[in-house]
Length: 100
Length: 529
Image (cartoon, rainbow over all chains, first blue to last red; front, side, top):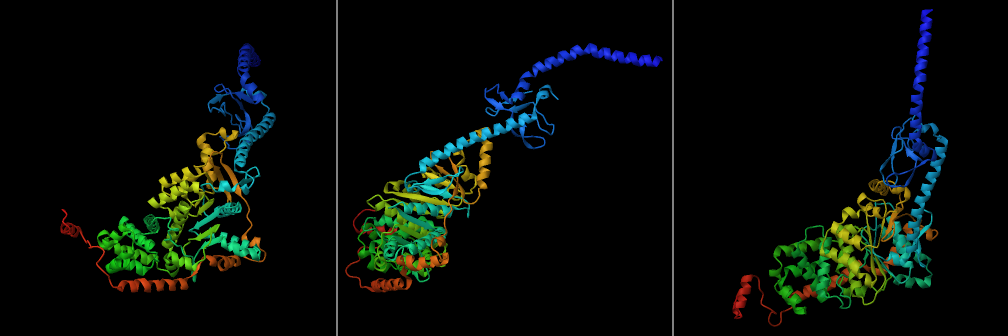
């Protein structure tokens, strides 16, 4: 009996901790969402403006994955093999653009 | 997965990538298309003829005027140079009043042109064939006949004896495979000056007599020579030319005049040539200077160099402007080292443009085969170049002028250049890069040319070449036996007879053998040493 109560109490305690921590995670998630808005917009629209030269670069192009060396049409920042990168070099000025 | 990818639509990304690639391709095409259009517009004209196909499928046409500009065709062996040269030559010849000169130390282009000429001859109506033959001059050699080169003709007195002799001697030196000293060249130029001045043929016996027989020089040659400087040189010949040099020159001529064809080809005097070969004013002159049993390598090279010199000298002295294209196959074989003659040829090919003469040089590996200084001068003077599969050094001449498409512009310049050099190294057969100065480089596939045998039904190429030798080339050649008879008669008359002719009067001058003799002579004359 005692042990059953102890288990329930432990579960309630953990649930309580989750409930108490939830606002923090919520705040973190909202912050992340807000912060990633430009990247999300870039991925959704498929273009990004170079902060250095101002030219618009396409994200959806034919590119070769540096890990699996497959050349595919799609987003240049990720590959179906699971490889993902956060930046690429501007097509016009060559300076690296951080997208994510 | 990072936040932004929550909303990633792979299908939409793929679709957009397709659109972007197509757009890029269109942009790239637009740059190349514009470049091609500019080149096409620059080359085209009412009398233009096609030389190949451009990447957009259209024809690249050039006018005879463009062909007649200084130019170079180069690339690896068997990649289509000869075919392109044939197309260019045919277009130029078809263009009207121009004269075509081919000097071929390889023989391949000569044979191709010979077959085409024979095919044209077969298709020419009988009553026009004589006129056709009068328009063609062939320099070649067979077992029984040879074309005299007529090296020592002063062109109706228009060329100075000294100038012609020096040029011919320089050509002999340039062609020689052995070390040829300045003194030897000088000795040869004196010999040539004597031959030109007296209208003598060049025979081995004459060479021997001039260089070894003092009595012959003083009794036979000196009294007949009008030029005082040449006379004085002959009078003091043994002082001016040391014995070893004289013997070396004799050895050189023994090698040079080793075959019958060469003895006749180089040897006949201008008057003998006039008596044996009917005069022509040809529009097409084909010179076969390939190595053969009649002409070993140095002789073949000498014939080619002397022929080029002939063409340049003829252009120098002619009073009127005449459109003329000089096609030199394997230029680096002929001008393999820097010399005064090479400088003259390059300079003349540039400066004689005002007389209408242009040079179309062909080479296999000019970047490595030609001396760098000469190559620089040549490239500077050229109006256009065409490069088949070629080395990196040669491909680098094109790379700065490649049309850079939007797609290529994204690549670093080094990578773009490296890619092009690789491409040039692996160009397929009959494909070349064409660069006309001031325009972009374009890639061209050579036009398909009907084989000579295709022009005449039922006649193969061997039969055409046989016909060429029998009907066309023979009109420019002399019988070796007949020419030898003339040379032998001359030798008997002048060398044998002249040598024993009695000396009348006093010798023309006291001979000076050394500096001591000269001083003694001065003392005797009352002068102070």
